[in-house]
Amino acid sequence: MQLLPVCTTGHLKQVWLDEWWITLMAPTLLYSLYSGKEVHRLRSSQRLQELRHFQVILEKVPYGGSSKTKRSFPELSAYTRHRQFKDITGTQGIVASGSLKVTLVHSSEAITVLRRLSREQPDRTILKSVFRSGSISETTICNICLRQTNQPQCNYTDLHTGDPWFCYKPKKLSCDTRMNHMNGGIGIKLKANEANLFKSNVNMQVFIQASGPANVTVLPQRKEQPMDSQGSGKSGLSGYYYQGVWRSLGGTKVHQFNNSSAISQCLKGKEVHMYGDSTVRQWFEYLDASLPDAKEINRNNPKKSGPFLIWDNAKNILVKFHLHGPPLSASIHIPTSELHYIANEIDDVVGGTNTVVIFGIWAHLTPFPMQFYIRRLYGIRRAVIRLLNRAPDTLVVIRTPNLRGTNPYIFAFNDWYAIQQDKVVRAVFKGLNVQLVDAWEMVLAHHLPHYIHPPPPIIKNMINIILSHMCPQ
Image (cartoon, rainbow, N blue to C red; front, top):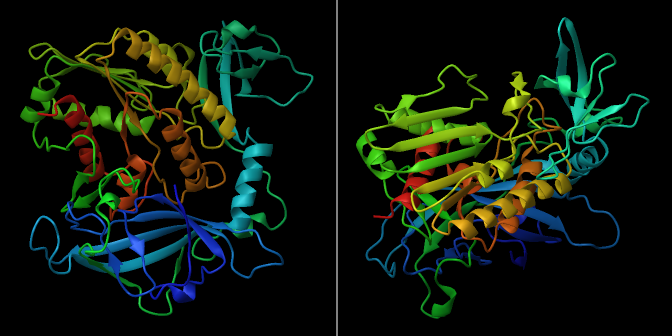
């Protein structure tokens, strides 16, 4: 990430960013903003068909006194249509033009509240377990840490991963009578007037009008621009959409697997292990629907929790999904026997050339302190290292978090929390022989509304990325 001093540009000069620094979080396409009315292209080898969404975070530079301009967590989106290009080097004609949209997602005051809630109320998502023995049944509160009371606690910390989990002990039953895990709702304690900082279309998800032109024109590379400024890897951009298809910038070329035959041919002889939350389950469901000859082994398991397994005997294809361990805020009762930590699951995988391990964990952990999330990821990282040491040819694919948009539980499940997770995932697994599916950018770049479960067009593109890693052709 590079900090760029931002002065008032010709396009957004009345949005007043003169006292701010801008941190480009996601894709910049190696663009530079000039004080004029054009954005010049720095990559001559890559045609730009569409300017895609940007994600930025504005961070206040310390200075004396107060400011009338609030810090924000905005979303800067560029919607464009391709105009023309003459050759592959992009040295002739205008490549693209479009308009900029700036949305205030949260004010700095709102982010202060979100930070405080994560720190002071990590138990604001209410999670419970039922304990049962014979005709006696009790329900108690569970969490990664419980507030100290006179009530004894049951310690379910995983002996292998060290991931903590506790429940208040039932009054009449022992700790080993725990039957399930379930969601008990949300319990938020806000201070006076804090709720007023989270009003849609008032101070949250507010479109900021530009007082002047808000257009951007993308021109070919300038002759005086040095060649060493070109190439992938410096922009932080993983790709963009053109005609609904995700185009990767750098890394494995993304191929299109548009029918069941192409998908099953790629998966032939493969063993695919999927672990995570419902955003990973979407990938399993896509493959399940794309493999009509495969049999569902455990069709009657609960739809939201699984576990699930499909098997194609003729093509020797095995695909399975397992939900990750607690915390889980799912609206179903999950048997304790199905609460498996990803690190432990990976340790049970033999691995090899025809083995693929896919995981993603974030959506249920956003309400909790980041230290807890980091601890969970480092446990998984150690398991991945062990897997790659015993079977270096194993393909490991990691799903990053994505935007989820406005939802009724904004104080616990929030895009500001998710972007912190996104940065942590990339940092924890950096340097390992793993592949990332950049769900954050793929959701941000698409014209469809943000939702925790990306719609089918985005899922299809994500699957194409995974299959392209399996079958680079």
